[in-house]
Amino acid sequence: MGKMYECYEVVLSFTNVEHTHNFYRLVKYGTLIDEMKNCIYTFIKYYDTLKNHLFNEYKTIFTGRVKNTQ
Image 1: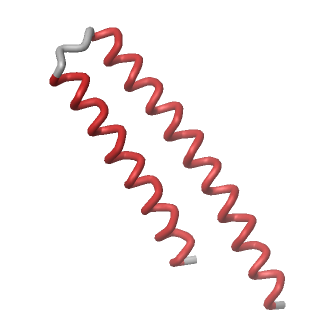
Image 2: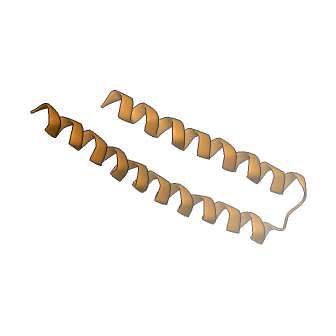
Image 3: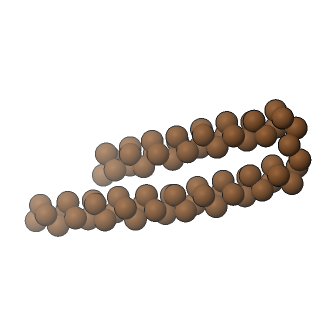
């Protein structure tokens, strides 16, 4: 399960860094507070969706590998 966890963490970390840079750009250019809040809520929703998708994808892959070894 170590490799599955590592792949999962890399994708989530990359997404986190990407969205953090996008948010810093909003702050740098003086974006309205409502737009910043919208960005934050959109990221949270996207992150949650991505996390669930990755979990289900790798769970299926891992489960398939376990069944094939038996």
